[in-house]
Amino acid sequence: MTQRTAPSVRVQAEDFDPGREQALLTHGRRDIGALVSFVGLCRDEDGSLESLELEHYPGMAETEIGRVADQALDRWPLLGLAVIHRFGRIRVGERIVLVIAAARRRADAFAAAEFLMDYLKTRAPFWKKERRADGATGDWVEAKSEDESATERWG
Amino acid sequence: MKALYFAWVRERIGLAEEEIAPPGEVATVRQLIDWLSARGEGYAAAFANPATIRAAVDKSHAAPDAPIGAAREIAFFPPMTGG
Image (cartoon, rainbow over all chains, first blue to last red):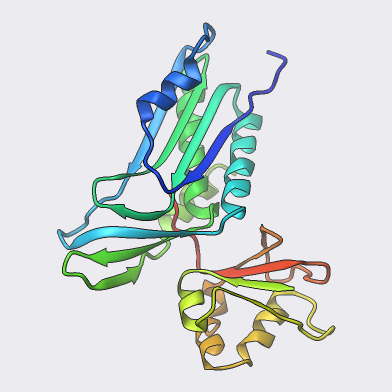
């Protein structure tokens, strides 16, 4: 394993197909033994949420996700890594984020995917604003301290 | 330099971006926040609690004591809620 894996990072308004992204990552490969795919969805807490408006910092979002992806590649022997993060209006039940980590062994793929998600939550420049089912504009989602501590545990 | 504002920082200031020319003695992110806060009510409201403000200098996360001297673009925003 001499050639370093290049991560695929996309920031887009459109939805994505996790199955297709997995197939792209594994196409023609014989060395991948584990593929961990995480999909984050827009969740309704109490029946009143219609959608989230995801604001992002164009340019920095891609750069920062790329930086975190590079850190994951430094820490684990990954054979493939893909991250897609959406922005704009995302309705309840729709996909927001995708992380796919491929490795020889599952421990590395699981750890890298979790690391990526923990870091994306606290480092990637995205902000969520709620839109209520009754048409009212809700609040900005507040950062959670448990997300911060989840990031810190990686040292 | 260009200043960018996101999420409720943008809403309180009422601008997504603007060209700013702080005086030379404004040398760090924290000093720039203080200087911007004095520009009007919206700014004062946006920066009222500096602990809730994050900054990026030329698209990299920057601490309050980071220098801003050569920066082309400085962004201010709340703690991130991606993922």
